[in-house]
Image (cartoon, rainbow, N blue to C red; front, side, top):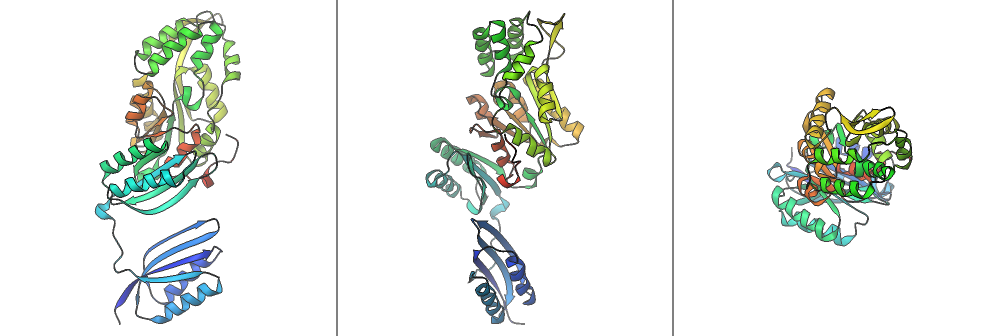
Length: 390
């Protein structure tokens, strides 16, 4: 037997059914050893790369050229030696998200990867339209340098860039836990209730201090709830009618449910709202604070344990245990100081349009105003997302 050659077969042209199978059939007849293969289609144009080890037999090249000619394809052959291994076994998935992703921001991302010693092995477009997203598979990069460089590129260009280990756990996430106010919802429920009680300005000031971590959450919550004393419980009907879901929320939850994720909402707000959201959107779990009601009116007091920063993290763990899901396979999403422990405890903590302390503490951030953009961080492309209105 003659020496075997390692050859890259590069095929481009109009995509149609049967190209990949036909090419592999020719290689199988030549008893080629398949070493690597990658294929993608952009706007109906196919790019297919196959690395094979085969004998010094020109017949296979003739057959491949004729196969390509019949289908209006272009084929090239290149001696590549031994296939390149992943340097040090390091692989990262880099996700770039923005309202626009032109050459300048993508160039900044590519430069940061190169400066970290990384090589881009594959680029996949995840989304287009109101949000554009790309996923880049990177090998060989130093983890710390990559994260620092991409963080700076994101800051300078105004896009979101997430860096994750490209391992099985990234696509094995099975539980997503969401904050409610200013995450699932565009509103702060307590502010809407305060408006009904004529205490909007005072409650809003307390809320902001709590979100920024300048005021203990339990203390701030009790102070705000006392300002609601005397409201008739029918106030929740009016508040629920005014609530605005974050754009993309229905698509986000619907897609997760279709793909088999468990979903939960944990809120520093109130059960009359979270119970309805659970029913309307199909969450598996919903936890929030319970308001005391006497004779159909709010007393200004709370009943039972407070869903604060510590309790949110505990609930994440309890739900994961109940579902039999390791914490490494959980995702937490939030925007305020009350979410910090939950974001830290989850396998992936995402700061969604969050304040600065949360952005600094989270694994990654999303600053576009669409909740379903989080799906791209899980490697879920636009073609897998529910098409129902958001």
